[in-house]
Each structure stands twice: as structure tokens, then as C-alpha cells.
Length: 191
Image 1 (cartoon, helix red, strand yellow):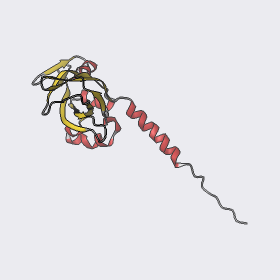
Image 2 (image 1 turned 120 degrees about the vertical axis):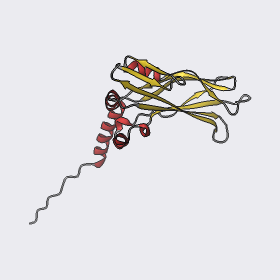
Image 3 (image 1 turned 90 degrees about the vertical axis):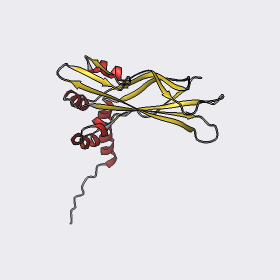
Image 4 (image 1 turned 180 degrees about the horizontal axis):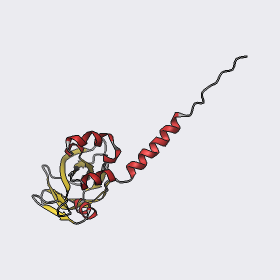
């Protein structure tokens, strides 16, 4: 009489679900969000006002506190809605904002909020709030919206891994702690 042992196979999908839950939990600790955008057209420009929530993970906060500057890219695209075919991309803009920590003065410095100006903040939360505030941001238009057509903007905020120092980039590319991205959100343009 032969006796054979069979290995008990555990469902692989269970491991994938557990790993996915852990990874999504890590990613959910902090992220970027576009919470409000009010786009309008005035004097040949697209004018944006709004708020971005820029939540940093503990790894990104640690790097910032050690003097590594962090850059955020804000992508904006203007579309004309069309009923029968895909919407037409009218124009795109890319803006950059940076934050750094000055250890001697214990100040957070934010650049890119206003042209050729650096603002200082005493706390990280205040600096991130200032960095994520869009106040009457004027973007020049190559082609003006016309008629009764419907227009909308898509906005996304993301951490720029390419702007990090070269030795840190491989870690940032492979770690979820550095993948901060709001994803695209759409906001209708007021006429």
C-alpha cells in the first residue's frame, strides 16, 4: 500500500488580495487631491482658482526635513466637449511648484506660487496649503473658446520623481511612498 502526501495549495488570489490591501493601505496614507477648481475665461486667458490637497507620506516628509527639495507638477488641459466624437484638446499647460526646508531658519520655502518669488512658512502644513492654493492663476489662450460650446479643464497634481537627486530616484521609482498623484479631475469652464 502506497501512501503519498500532497501539498496543500493555498489559493493565490488570497495572497494577491492581501498584498493588494496592504499596498493600497500604504498608498492611502497620503496622496494628492484636486478638491476644487473654478475655471473661467477672461481677457483672452484661462483663469483658475482652486485648491489642491498635497498630503505627503512619512518617507517624503523625512527626505524634505533632511534638505531634499520636492517638486510638484500641476498639469492643466483645456477641452471642448463634442457630442459625436471624442473631445478636442484645445491647449495644455504644465506648472511646477517646489518646496524645500531651510534648517537654519526652520522655514519651509515654496517656489513657483508667484513668478520670481519664494514664500516662507513656519510649518509644513501651512507650506503645503500655500503650495496647493491656486489664486487667479492666469494661463494665456492661443485660441479663445467661442459660441455656446461646452468647455472643461482637466487638472492633475503629481510629485516629480525626475527632479529628485539621482541617488534617490531608484528608491522613489520602486516605492509606493513616492507615488503621489491626484489623477485627472474635470471641471467645467464658466462663460
